[in-house]
Length: 232
Image (cartoon, rainbow, N blue to C red; front, side, top):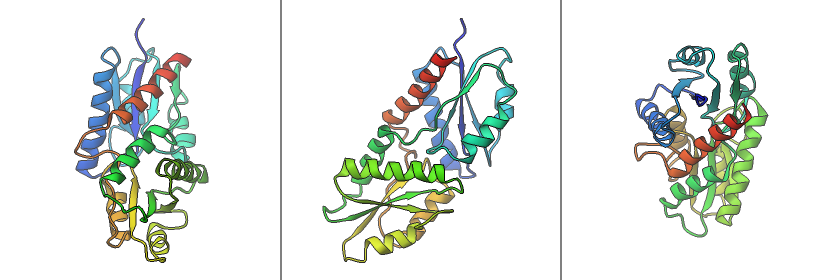
């Protein structure tokens, strides 16, 4: 029996470094699943889009679509559902977050900044017009706070409050240094915006970059696929 294909769908970015980082993740997943057909598509900005990606797979082949998205907002609940509605034997897995494996990577990248024990931590997240996605990010903030054993303030880059710049200012108001954890998938517009809004506070690397994907991220995507495949 042919294994279900894995269709990884990222948000998409115009940033070449971000594109390479996402591709490296899917390549690592494909290496972990040598008997599985793995495709990469995008919900916005880049091609191939969802429809074009699905068209590369035989109509009769079952498909597990794994959103390479950190929270379940409009893209997951509406876009992906609508764009795959005509495809039989296709399952859309949960978004990647919230998940302890993402928190593991966040904590590792934050530690590279060597924040002092009294440093105030801000978690920079993209933000969404769908508050379900924002609540997923707040959950990740709570998980990171539990992991670090210190408070974490979630700052949004768009669509929700508080914005990252305001969160950094408020966190530093007591005189403590501020360090910014980076809950973004890869380099791109939002990462550059986070650095700018941090106004000199150090900003950790995004979850993916030129260093290659952490094993925890590969494990997470593979796990999403296997659970989805078991449901078909």
